[in-house]
Image 1 (cartoon, rainbow, N blue to C red):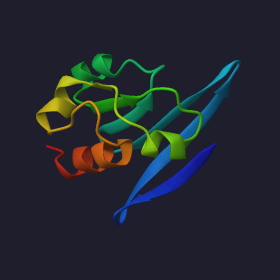
Image 2: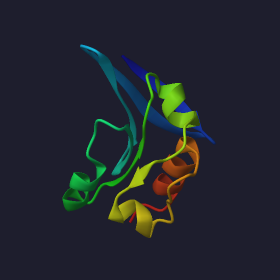
Image 3: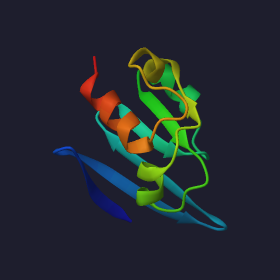
Length: 98
């Protein structure tokens, strides 16, 4: 399932891919990704993608409202830290793209 999400007048793409026993959930814009815990955000560093993860989510709304549990190096350089709200982290990543 695909949905558009508005973050302070910035539109991002949100996705929920149902898998057996769980949902793969993520939202992206350009080289920025907010993802569920099933995605290895650290592996995305080598592609120049800023990424953070929020665990225990089933929907894009859960992803946006949840607390960030992990951040890769590209996202860290953009000021993203563990504990901040998912939507805040994604918006900061988008605003600080290289």
